[in-house]
Amino acid sequence: MHRYVPAPADLRAWIRGGVVIHRGPGPGISRFPALTTGMITVRLRGEVTTAAHLPLPRAAFVGPGTRPAVYRHVGPLHAVGLIVQAAALPCLLGTGAAAAVDTFVPMLALYGPRWADWEEQLERASGDEARLSVLFRFVRQLASLPVHAARRARLEAWERAVCRDLAEAPAALGMSLRQLERRFGTEFGMSPKRFQRVDRVAATLYRAMRGPVGGAELALAQGFYDQSHMARDLRQLAGHPLQALMSGLGREDGDHWPLSVGALGDPPQG
Image 1: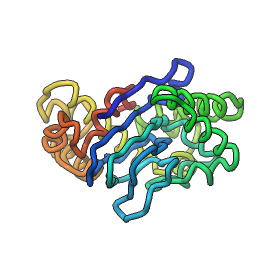
Image 2: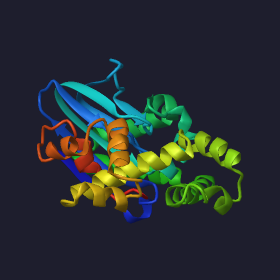
Image 3: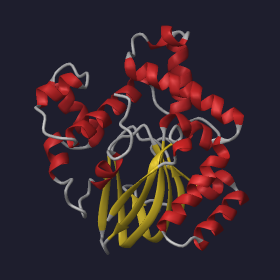
Image 4: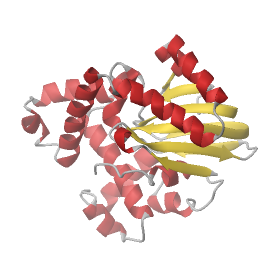
């Protein structure tokens, strides 16, 4: 079972939503496409490893991904988490998202003793809704700092400009192309072009999940040159052709459940 919980209104610029995950005894696989967003995850039961066999910490900040990612679990899995908006990632990480791209950072290493206090609150919480409320309060505390709010708003403007028109983005933001590439890469963990591609693939998948649409029509609507261009990006950034991704979404035990959960939040910019 996978459940999506919308973020409180005051946090929607920071958090796309909360997620509750219950999976069977396994072994099981979870497949994520490349994503501009990140996640704060807290595992309450079960063990999770990456494709490289690295154990995922009990509480981790998972960064954005420039390529598809695979996680494996053994034993029943129970976890809660928050989907973090792309422009909020550098603020919550305290540094550019480049430090966390395609990897994760233990929450204790990132936030030190203050995270231990929050983890105690999570352990005392009664039920998943209460646990998500603790995580929402944690983000709200960080988001309340004026320096973070100003930075997030600036990065959101960068994100919109890059996703709207990559060629016009430097002029719209008052930067040279080289400046934008350097500064954007530091903050978001990927180049503007890669970010736009990843965002567009996510938008394409979420649009396809809302109802049947022809491949050529979908490609054109999402800004691809043609259907073969869309198919190439889907294979590279989501790991599978569109039909394969869509076919398994109705299964609770399917590998691609993150797509179903992610589509319930606000759609990407693309």
